[in-house]
Image (spheres, each protein chain N blue to C red):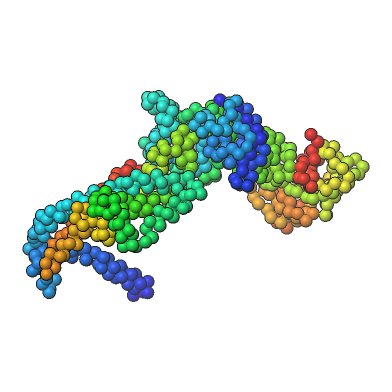
Length: 273
Length: 363
């Protein structure tokens, strides 16, 4: 066997190991979500078993889970929406109309994310308590908007900067003003990268745990908090329920990204056909 | 249709002056070419006329109306960009229609105008496609269609052919020339390609370092270059230059340099004795010397390099310490190492003042 073939084989094996270590836990979680407790705690891993929907039924049957889902959807959705509505025009302005403030603006926005969440969670908690908004969706939306705004702006500036300047100038000569150029030219051309930025922002706040833990106690609890509480059900760890809640928790972001990339595909299909 | 008047136009970026005191009158229907090396300010000037760049000082008027503070859309201009600048997310049809939509032209009329323009430029089969599905030449034709359809008062071209390969460039050049013949729209065309400039222009504006070197018809610029820079920039192969000193002799002037002594009547030039001048002559103006010629006026040397051009060949040899090029018929072409000798006709001499590079031709 030549050295090159051997190298390729080793490379493949490494890749397989890496892929396995990434995919198998997800697969195992999915499998365990459909198992009875007995099948999970057995010392020999079981691949063939009688599936049950009890875990899902239990998770979905709990009012706290449903409330958490609604909270998560509203809080993540609203903060991403506001982050995109404010962040995309801001990013475009920074990319296309730079002035002496734009660097500072960019830095300030990033600085919102400098401190570890635990360090900003406590002051935020005090602020919201003082306003009487502690443990409300509104306070969570405002807090999360700081996160989504920073992410959207930082990921969108390069996306807008990549839009060829001449194309925008051609639109100017064609008679369009800056706002029309933003909506009709820059936004559609940069769409692909922008959707990535927005999706990333969504996943970030959807999975956010620490700030939510500090800023909510009951009314505005998000799904990750509710899911974590499921471990405190008793002395025995309810593995099946945990796995089922993890699976349920992963579905919305997957759907969100799926819908977005579907939109992308349809938007760009005509180009390649 | 409209004329364009630039008076005392300046452009500064901060403290850096890019264009200083630029003056030009472009007549209605005229095809003007801004020609010059990279960074000479020709594109900046075009963009200032288009309204894409602020005018730091002076005045630009289109059709008798000062446009300094007008946005591009109110200037009645259409522009074709070097990299086409088509809207990548729109079909060719929408690309061409985009400007008309802004002008609130009714849909049936847009349709009808696009059909007409597409027929002129041979774009009919592509109207439903996206720009990336088209070749460079087709894309540039779309860009021209997009400019044409607005029936602008002024066409602005910013190096429109420099992204195309040589063959396509020739083809598109002819198309642009035809288009101008048909539409007669006042046109300003920026290029660094002298062939484009020579073939397309009614008048060439030759620029260097943000200032005009010479304005004139292609023939004027070729035959009577006003400065050393113009003489060196225009013409392929390049003009030959030799540094000489003038000396008054019987029946004219002697132009003496290291290893060279050319005799000239010099009546066309304003010369003073002992003046340091640059003698210029084009490779195509050299003629193979015969024994009957005045040996004093012969430029001779050992052929060093022979480049075959098809009909002609360019012979390079060392004379008076300079590399001299001579264009000869390919059939009479010497081999490297051969002794070659050429004469220069009095009428094809160019003389420039060494101190300021200005032509010494009498006005």
